[in-house]
Length: 97
Image 1 (cartoon, rainbow, N blue to C red):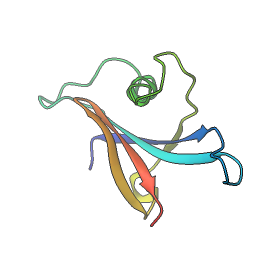
Image 2: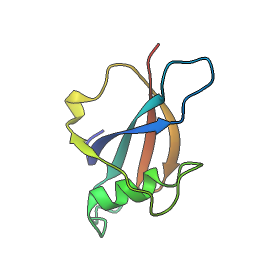
Image 3: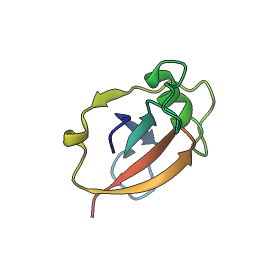
């Protein structure tokens, strides 16, 4: 998975009836540093990660996103379920099974 920068973020949803508190979903956002021809992408990777994350259903283009950069070796060991894919990045939902 080299050539990518990884960020982790959380999305807090409103409480579900008969459940305790709010539901918190953990996501990993991966953005490519270079296109398939080896040219670096324009713009800052964290800005592109925010833009990619905000493409998820229910998110607004300008919704705030708190991102924390993580190293590839620090990726969660849980299952990652792809939630969104685009040409320069992807969003994965961290599934606790």
